[in-house]
Length: 121
Length: 280
Image: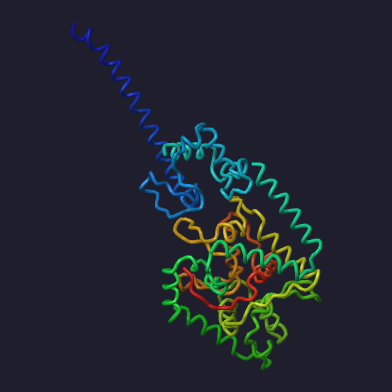
């Protein structure tokens, strides 16, 4: 009978904890995947132009585009950041940033992953 | 948003007005001076002649390393191989030296030039091949390290110190120059880049770990030996750039590259030639 009264709350708490851990690790995985794409010379190659001060693994001296900082302040709407990656010439026709989505440099899914990575800074 | 667009319209009007009224030589000289002023603002205090050193104008460390390597460059054997080809008489007894004024000394600064009879831009490498054909020999393949690459590398050293001296002196020459200029400013490839984007507007900035070289002076120092070993001609560098921008390169001795070389060489007018050189 002891078993009957106690298991319920324990199970619920465990479920919540497990669900949280699972979603956190899924998000970590997305960020890791986004980082790999962003750092890859033949994919995002973001480090060619941008520094990422918050990421010690981002080895670059680039000073062409602005550093990846304050992204939530600069792009309160996440969709706006994604649109910037998809085709930066919409907001600035003179931009030299490649239109990653428009020209198919990255897939739609890859762009989402890169946004996950940079939106944490 | 409105400001850059309005600026572009004004710029376009000014440019088209200038193009409509200026004589060919005046138009190209106005372009050159405009770009020289741009770089003077970008790199204050850098003497014009230093632009032959490319990105090293922004890195004293790289320049020091360069000077050290150039004291005894690792590619002397390649220049020697080029010299042997240059000096070896053709089967009819003629030589390369015999095809050029003053035995080929101080001639490269006059290339490329516009040739009325063929309506073509003639590069120095084309002149080398014409020399072979005029003497009953088979022409060399453009873009090959040997014999063309090493021959050009050596032959160009005979013009070291000569000032670039490109002329755009007729309407037809102007058309070739304009075609080269158009290519220089045109957005190209999957990465949507332009020669002028990196090498004019972003020159001196750092891309990952490397400083971007200025287009002014670009035409003066070819071929280069990358890392002291890889021979790369000016047009070979065009091809590499295009691949990096994920565009299909026009290819060695294409009309497009010859026109671009004509435009870029004009930009470097007055600068001293310096071949062949080490680059990272």
